[in-house]
Image 1 (cartoon, rainbow, N blue to C red):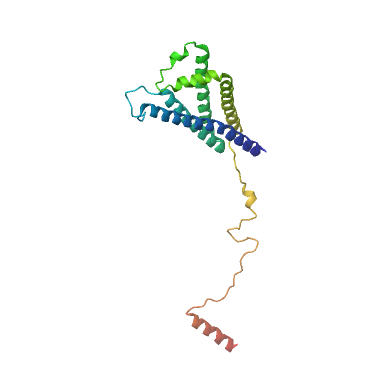
Image 2 (cartoon, helix red, strand yellow; image 1 turned 135 degrees about the vertical axis):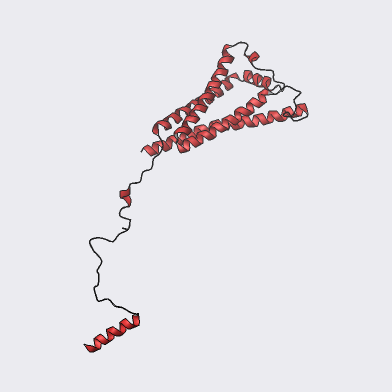
Length: 217
């Protein structure tokens, strides 16, 4: 029963953790599209141009997407192995991610001049993102709450798996005693021995002696 419950929680964690992975892949694709647009605007590859300001929003989105994919991979490994160290590391990653999101959210809602905390983005992607969020605030709000809920659920499932412990397989020696062959012969039936006079010489001589004994008798 315990193994079935553990397997059920492992499957749920993998499924919920896949949502974070899909979000990371979406952010990577979005960042690559922004890099392509920025390349067309600058007429040269943005990573080599040191004269213009760094498009930090594009790089931040790309780094965050890669981080989410790494967290997803660590979550799948932790869910598959149910190893204590892997689960602790995965819970640490998710906790730090939630803390960063909470800090940014608090700064945006409490600080009226929160836009001054971010540097200027030369690509204009940050301004477009802010305009999109303001136009679709309700949809973005529910998307953000859903993402935080998924992350919290992943953290909770990892804690439950850590409490359940790893799956231990134990094989008793008594289950295989009937199938084993004894190394020593059974003491209840000792081997029989034949006692006779020692025979010396070659085999042909010994046979000759036996034939002469029979003829004399």
